[in-house]
Amino acid sequence: DGGITQSPKYLFRKEGQNVTLSCEQNLNHDAMYWYRQDPGQGLRLIYYSQIVNDFQKGDIAEGYSVSREKKESFPLTVTSAQKNPTAFYLCASTRDRGQTEAFFGQGTRLTVV
Amino acid sequence: RKEVEQDPGPFNVPEGATVAFNCTYSNSASQSFFWYRQDCRKEPKLLMSVYSSGNEDGRFTAQLNRASQYISLLIRDSKLSDSATYLCVVNTPGGYNKLIFGAGTRLAVHP
Image (cartoon, rainbow over all chains, first blue to last red; front, side):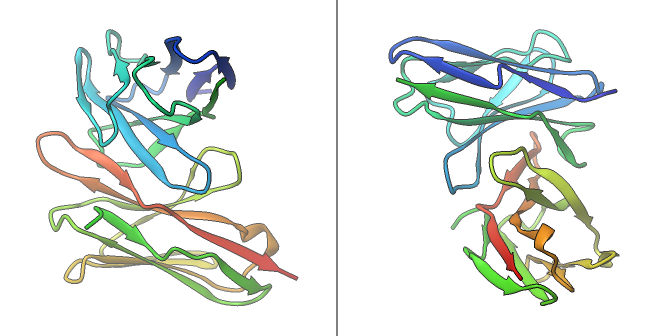
């Protein structure tokens, strides 16, 4: 079955450490997105990419980095520069460049202690 | 002004009630609109796309008003299982399309 896989589902890290969240899709979708969700709040866009080797900052990119070396993969690194990294991180993809519905992975809950 | 704004909620309604959610968007060039449902601690899932002519799927009806930059979702005959957060989603066109989510409106349906 096609879909988006995020791993791990839960992640604990010490403050000051960088951590990379995985996102893989086998839907052959062009565009991929990373969102952050805090308790009781909506989704905020971190980064997005419409083609391989190209990506754009979203509204809250500071303290995060991404790469898009392959069409199916869009990993997110949460760096030590991100001041409040504890959150629910969601990866999504769309068939084209944002005109059609987004499919989501199951998310990664990151807790920094 | 936020790019996508929704009624803050929460909406607490009895089973069988009709409830309406509203959403406004700021970019008049937006072309794609969606309603998603998100259950607690889960990923959002597509409820329905919103078309210019309006569309209906069972108990759910979505409307788009381009002139007012407004979309709506109507849920008829609410069920307990409808309890969730409903997210309005709009694409922002331009050189780089991106999907922008509203903050969501929480619905609680009680017996």
